[in-house]
Image: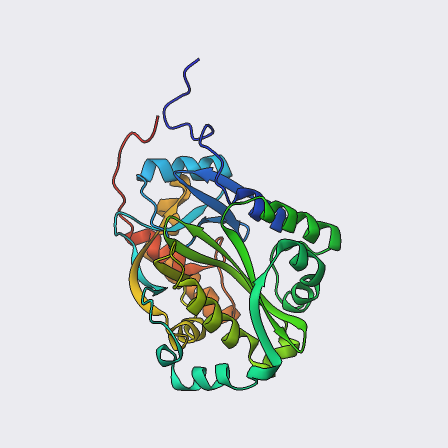
Length: 308
């Protein structure tokens, strides 16, 4: 029997899907990329810097299948709102690439910090404490018990070109990041640190050393720390710029499920939700993020029959 037009269930599973599932996310491999659940109502594409080529109908079918209200992704159609993606493409990246204060944090405490690649077996044994500290006040999916974390690292070990790098302070793991090389681009997928070591700035040392080593690899011509979220978090972008990553314009699109699009993207609805946000001192609206509705209101994806 021939599958109905636009049925994405036959899409090959994305290489990163097992890792994100083990991490605790719901995943969907569709439209040539991976989608993960973000909060209760949205999906976002992974890696978050890679443009997605899709028609509105294709994204709407994705939302129907996932049961979500909104999808957010960098658009190959260059529609939506412009945000910054953060990249290093200069093989000469080094101390001179860093903002002065960032460079000072990297140079200070150098004798007590060591940055190096970490095997998944070692991370399974030593990374749980970092996660417990990192997620003590941070909601979201993560492999919270020892068994789940060890299973996550086993799944990660089976994924080609997925790697971990750690920063050790006095021999203790203080921070680590997970990166994935696809084509000739290296995407930093996630980063976690234990706040107990913040005075020694393991974040600064980890990013600077990892970037310097990675951009010099023969199989890598660009490294990215991802893109600004919606809404953008200024302090996060500042950290990336100070680390020597250059902002590059990245069009980010958002699509709302058809049955809700007219209501949620109407200027009156968005104004009312923003008013509730100000009164309540927190994000309001069914998406938990009014700014996504603003982006959806101006997103203009091509229309088409979609994939067969």
